[in-house]
Amino acid sequence: MNSPLKIGVVMFPGSNCDRDAACAWADDLGLGESVFLWHTETAIPAGIGAVVVPGGFSYGDALRAGAIACFAPIMTEVAAFAKDGGFVLGICNGFQVLCESGLLPGALVRNEQMRFLCRPVNLRVETTDSPFTNRYTPGEVVSIPVAHGEGRYVCSPETLAELHRTESVLFRYCEPDGTVGEKSAANGSQDNIAGIIGGVRRNILGMMPHPERAVLPRLGSEGGAKLWYSLRESLAIAGAEPVFVIA
Image (cartoon, rainbow, N blue to C red; front, side, top):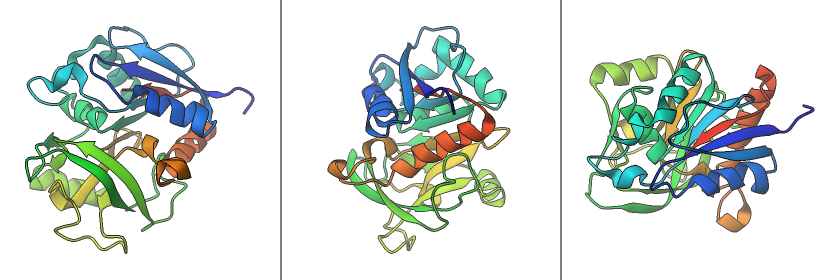
């Protein structure tokens, strides 16, 4: 590709992972350029090829996590962008915002043990048939950190059945050997779900673990690097040159 891929990072009041995502893409992995977009923006700049929504505590998690951020002006643009097939990645608080916005099904509620969870977890890659996991292998186990108090994924039985029917569960909490059990998900997520995909072209991913914090050995893990490489490859195939990231 002749031009570097560009990611846009949307910043809400209370975001704290915006620079982590920007650095992972542009500096740590050297995949392209990153720019920041404030929550009051009413347009996504030309040349943006994907939207990532990294974590933090948007608007102080007032009411509930993501409940206010979903009404920010930029989210109207993100919804339209996703509807047109643009890549969107929501991480932690970003996943919460995407669910509150109706861009992904289900909800994120208080962790089962009612306390903040902050540590590395093991994830099993359930499918590589997505723009975000094509560089992984099916069943691959990676270590990626989590940091959330409202990360327990829940949905209706009908939604869960549909997620499985369409192979829309991308990541599940597991043991180091890949075994999925009741104790694998410390937050109590339904069916050990850590990340799901949706959208008209399987172009929207929401996940609670932080792949931007697991891209280099000095960070303790490289388990998240393949996700960013997968996204870059998908953008190259699609002929897009930039990417958009929301924090």
